[in-house]
Image (tube, rainbow, N blue to C red; front, side, top):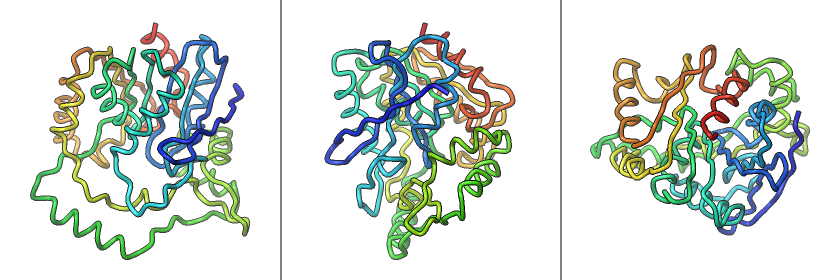
Length: 291
């Protein structure tokens, strides 16, 4: 495996972890992980990159080795603010290559429309966004959020690292034992009692009060000027949060269509965690596109 190194910076008052691979003098490639994931998740793709890259992957706030903000609610706009600060620190005077997976892909697309001049090329890995909401959903959403604030959220711990690895393989049966062992060492860590705890703030699992306003999201996507590579897995799990396939597929295609310069790719024999399932194929797609 290619070795990584850690850097800790202060981002909007919060101690934030950046994982680096490769020569700092090489071209930069930023990678953004998804919900309930960590920066080390990209290790297998990094290992498959043929060219020399300086890969930089942050742990989002409340994930991995980045600090928890101590809030009772996470707001999506904070990821955009954090990303902007990270890019000012790491690449203040250049347009960058950006890869985002799932939640990270959604954040990357929004940022690429808001700060269009900052993006050279963008790769979206299964960053579909969320199911469309309607204004009349707001009262119920706020009520659910208020109710959940009354009960402190928890994430179950695991007896040992092997149990963490088994949990990862249960979620993704394509994950090999070797890869599960590596990921488990970054995805969780033992607490003072020796119980392995997920490196993710339990608050992430609570309902947010703000609806997913797709018109606002697509208004950002329409402003993207960089070429975009949209990558899906042939066994995607998008239907779990986007709704039935017969309804979600046309909506996903509608969203893709608002991006001015976009090409699509499908990775076979892969699920939502396609960067774990087929890192070799994904690395080739990314590097060919960035070239």
